[in-house]
Length: 316
Image 1: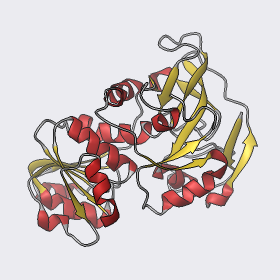
Image 2 (image 1 turned 135 degrees about the vertical axis):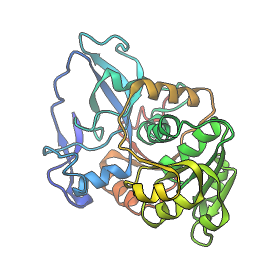
Image 3 (image 1 turned 60 degrees about the vertical axis):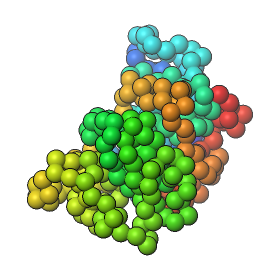
């Protein structure tokens, strides 16, 4: 199979094209002919070695953890998928990733691709969408009428979190740059704050949920806008328990655990039009280094899409 691999931790220049042998198909695995993937911030953090202790790599390594394509083969014990199925997935981090034209994935991590989405659009959903799902649905247990603050609403996780919260009939405020305020409102945010000129912590209070995608000073200020008993859920850094206790709120940090059943439920929101994909700039797989450089600026709008098969990525 063709892939973009790295032989060491380092800058985007460490990527190179390679021909690799797929890992053997296990009894519960499916082999996906991968038409598209996407870039997430965790990709370049792993590439740089920032997560080497938690997620060590064996070189040469294939990064990428979003996949959308067609099932080409199945293991003998696979029950829910067959050859020809259109699927999408957030595969296991411990296996070779999705910057390649074939991916071996345990069927428990695979879901039917929403028929309303192209493969490229579907590939933008799994990691970022499941992160929003786990934060809001699983941990915060979002309910209609809740007040939710989503930081960095123009980003991949933020864009899906806004839509997901609105699908659950919450009142949503988000932070974004001035150039993205109209964009995040179009995604469904009830109100948007220009974080460069406005102070959200002075403008709002009594939130039930804060989704922290930034960490640092943003996280510290976010404790003060929660009402007693509210919850701060962070994907950026571990919140300080003492600070949470002082504000009489809860605080959680998590590292996403992929799940095909949850991805199927999330996919239904796209199938029915209650959510839509947030694909910004798109690159061919051969230009993955350029895509990483863009992601590292932390000023992207939506997800960075990666076309693996130009002839199939834009098909539904």
